[in-house]
Image (tube, rainbow, N blue to C red; front, side, top):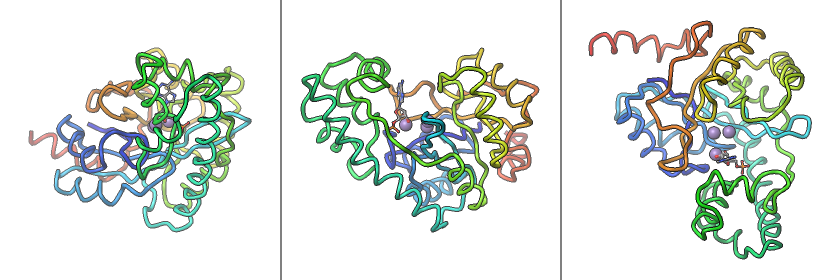
Length: 286
Ligand code: AMP
Ligand code: MN
Ligand code: MN
Ligand code: MN
């Protein structure tokens, strides 16, 4: 019923913001956060559609961050979509993506794959250029059978299409979100492949900077990781979030409206949110 992480065509999702809201409503979601990568340009359209669907839209974003040479994603929930400081900072992050995509394409050329930049741009149209757009091109050309294997073969560290990139600092991302009235959430911590000591360091620093929650239930976590990150949240006094990280049919880890419940010891990030409190009465009448 509550899905706090999803993408539209404004970043690397397959559905337009309005289509995404419609799909979420059809899947039983009542509170949805649109969290496009480094862009909040889809929120107005999503809000309009959510009103029509009698659904609650949470204004969100997923900011790309570099922390100790690693790429992390920080989700901002309840940010102000009219915040000019946030908007221009995100525009700066997006600008760097074009040059990065050109370098990725050059890397692929060395493996005999040509035209990746142009093809990825076609998939992306007006949206930001992401590795997901390269993945779609590579799958279409049969370089791998699906997005998952294409990433492994071409788009992760050490592979021909991977390029080191400096994203926003953790400090800037958290403070931009907070100054915009939002809640900073560490996205899919189980995906970072970092050792326990680094994870402890990251959570300590994230909390000290004003981070408030971590994603415990997310499409790319295993059930064992739900338990593991529920423990981390408890250890650091951080709240827990949940979201599908939906990108579109066939390219997502998990569909919408199918999220398992947070482990019992978690304090949900939405505990006092009016959007969720009002659901109880709606739910009871159904
Ligand atoms: P970028 O921000 O350009 O590095 O693109 C990252 C996006 O690629 C993520 O937001 C995911 O949508 C997707 N992605 C990253 N790693 C994987 C993976 N191993 N399998 C499938 N999709 C992935
Ligand atoms: Mn993505
Ligand atoms: Mn992410
Ligand atoms: Mn995401």
